[in-house]
Length: 152
Image (tube, rainbow, N blue to C red):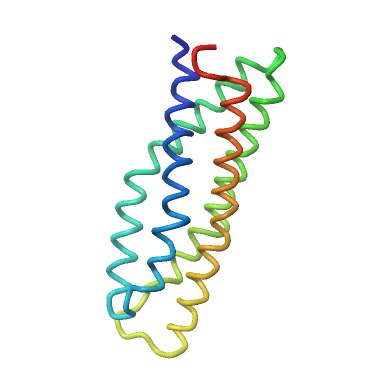
């Protein structure tokens, strides 16, 4: 059994499924949360989501780096490099787009018209920019399926 590939299948498969759920269901729900509850909802989301995704993202990144080291001189070195590049896109998108947008949502218990407009814009941008991660994780899973199929 190839533990390194198994870890990549588990982490990438989990994150791909989760990101599609977040993209299609969870992030759009923000638009239906009342402004009086948005601060609590946002804090809950960030705390709980971080607990779930951070270990998987770190494990996936470390495994992707090890896979690149292992495959570097082989026929699949470019695939491992592409997979690690996609992880770079995912992490950069998280740091540049998602985290800053989350910090603009639910920052006050007594929202004004201006803060409500900022929050609505941040929610729209959060949903739109999350397509970057959704597509990158989907592409990463496709690379695994094509070049590193289970049992191969």
